[in-house]
Length: 128
Image (cartoon, rainbow, N blue to C red; front, side, top):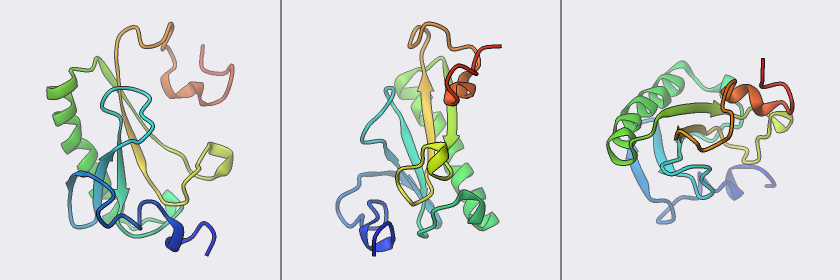
């Protein structure tokens, strides 16, 4: 099944993923292609490609892990800020068809002008 559970890198996780922390509904791992030190993915256990199709329990459990892992990242990496993001659909840049939330530590000087933060997802529109 193309782009389904059988070839999903998050569902096929037996022994391959190093889980940082988890709860009964979701788990957190370090991103394999981090954009900064400490970049983490929070992933619901149920295979689902669209964030808006998650149950309220899955959404809440994912955000609970975001809060839990943020404290650990702050202690270990001492970032100056964070971005949190979810890519939903190909037009938004989603490349893995399984919901995952990005928790990205940010550091002073990691880009020339960070003003606008996630608004930079649309080229040339981030500055205001």
